[in-house]
Amino acid sequence: MANKKTRKVRAAANARTKAEARKNPKAATTLTQPLPKSVVSQNRSEGLRLFKLAGRPTMEQFVLVYGDRGPKMTWGQRAAAGVPAKKFQAALAAKQAGR
Image (cartoon, rainbow, N blue to C red; front, side):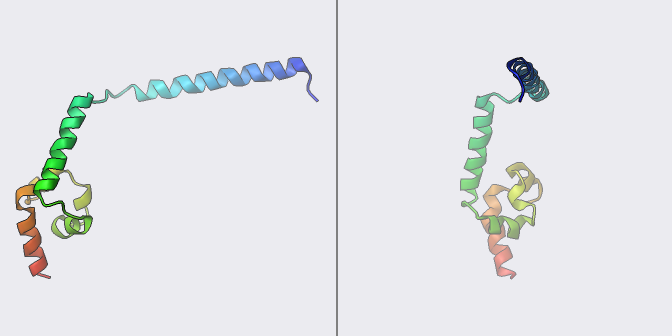
């Protein structure tokens, strides 16, 4: 069994490594600047507005209109693909009629 001095030395060594481990991830995460909350809120609210404008489509409807990547696309990417939020319901009706 280890004596008290040996235990203290081991405990001190572990404490230093934990402190070093805490410092390293913080340095790695500070490389990118996060967006201010107001910008994030504006982007989110704009996406929700477009989602409502499109008629609150389901994931299956996104796949039907835009393909497999549809649910993962942003509204800007969906508009660039040819179907903006305003015309989503018309495109969906055309796709469903063609089934």
